[in-house]
Structure formats: structure tokens, C-alpha cells
Length: 232
Image (cartoon, rainbow, N blue to C red; front, side, top):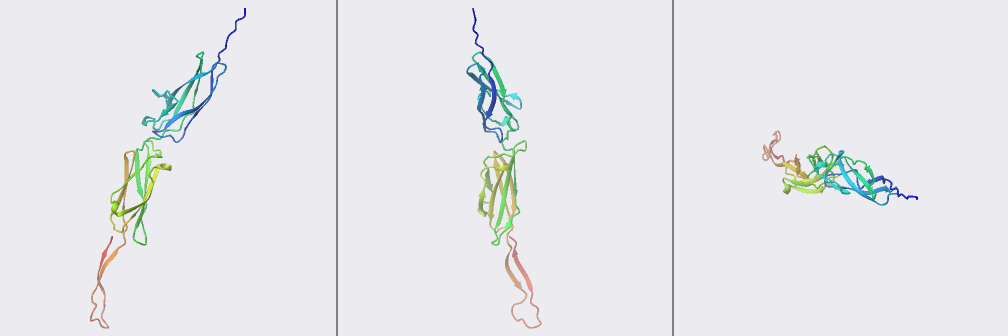
């Protein structure tokens, strides 16, 4: 009498595709887009997931998606996928690692261009905010809140609302011909940086006093006794 056996092979995971591996930052979600499994004669398989941070399993991170937190700052991530068939045979594969995750802003530096004085006496200044995480990596795509200490003196021009390439955002202002200092701050994720610029006003001559304006005769000397200048 012959006995017929059903052979249940072990599933083989050929590849794992993630939605994103580069440019990840805290607050993003990384997820499994596709798992290519060869059933190998064992029928349908069930997939299970375990996310890892710098090689160590992350507690509770067992779904196909993982939301990045502050704890992931500077870390590389990968997901391990297990395929299990009806016979409880398992296949296992780890995905490729992501690039290090960028964290929230840790330092905000604001610098100002050398102010230029236009023909009409107005000052044009460009302030640049550079935002880094605690590992010194550029923080991209985060909102910038700008503040001007003397808004009544300036006209605000082109302004970045979020950090761009290199973690940089800029704001250009035109100031009145008043002299003094304009200080601008930029706040990202609760971290603040600021920079002040001395305004370069155009000097105003209020009055000129001569030593004599009447009764002049040949041989006399006329001269400037006083010039009243407002430096601005």
C-alpha cells in the first residue's frame, strides 16, 4: 500500500521594498511597500514584521509601518520580515538599512548679510537661519517662525516659511534710514537663534554756519564755522 505525502517547503523571501530609505526625519513614517515571497510549495504565507533600530529590536514595532520618534535620531533602521506557511515553516529576511534619521532642531543659527545702502537711503539685509539636529545634520522641511524686534522700521520681503536644502531658510528686509540696530530671530521646533545688524543710514546735514555772510569785501576770508550733521 502506497502512502502519499504532501511536501510543504519553506517560503523564501526574495526582497523587501520600503517606501523610503533616505531623507527620513523624526515624525515621518517608514513602511513596507512590497515583500516578494516564493511560496516554495507551501501555499499561502502570513507575514510578520519586527523593526530594528541600530540593530536592536524596537519594542512594540511589529506592524508593516513604523512612525519615527526622537529616539530614532541618528539611528539607521531596518525591518525583519518572517513568512510563515500553513505547515508553520518559516522564511526570514531583513530589509536594507535606512540612512541615519534626522532629528528635530537642536541648534538654530541666524546670520545677516552685510547691509547694503541703496540710493534712496534704505538698507537691504538678508538674514539666514541654519538649522541642525543634535548630530549636526541639516533639519529639512520644518516650519520657521521669524520675529523682528522693530517691525515698524522694516518692510519684509521674500521669506522662507520652512527649512530647505541644508536646513537653511532666509528672510530679506528693507529698513528705513534711521540708524540703530535691527534684530531678527528664527525659531524652529522651539529652538531659537537671532542676529542683529547696525543700520547704515545716510548722514543728514541739518545746517551750515559761515563766519560772515554780510559786509564782505575784497581781502576778507569767508569760512565754515560749523556744520550740524545727523549721522543716522
